[in-house]
Length: 253
Image 1 (cartoon, rainbow, N blue to C red):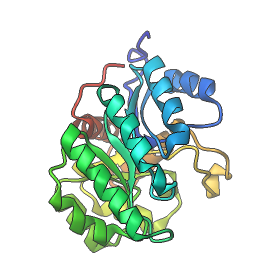
Image 2: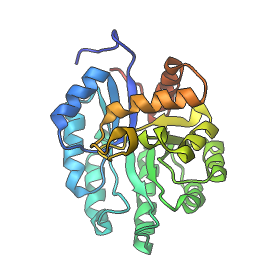
Image 3: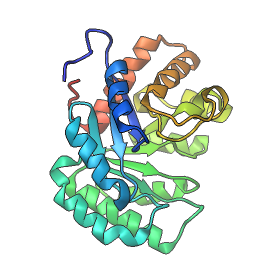
């Protein structure tokens, strides 16, 4: 692929999923010069994520994980797919806990996938809705390469723990219109922040409840740079460096 770096430096969407129009996604990535970290959620989307990643290897990092709200009985089959594709997977995600569907089985599945991340020495992208405290208590039991708390539903004190441990935290489009998320973004050190779209999530306010795509991170970067009172280009560079540190690999767009 011919690089667009002569137009503008690339940006990184640290967390997204399969969207309805994958051809449009590829074109949008080229137009906006955006690298993406694409996460699986279940057996259903695993092959699609891996296929898109292989076809667009210079623009995508593939993360494989069984989402806590997916069928937890898929773990054995999902684990086998992860092992077979270990050399093509850059990380483990989206994995985690969710208070809305929490069960002992969900906890076991989460820990099993952390063990895989430890064994394969892969970074992890973690879902933590309503379970940040418990997750923070669990993580030190594993030797994890890098940790991203994706769109954490956390308190300021929990955010402090996240940052103090050297974990990364990602903020998405809702930050643009949420006072609570803006306050958390303001609190987080710039060295800990990544930006994400969590596509295809639909966002309200200025985003008009349309299916999102990675181009939405442009608004997130502008908003966080504004509230932190730094130049947009400076914050773009920070998030780019943070993304490279999280992935622990070079990105050559």
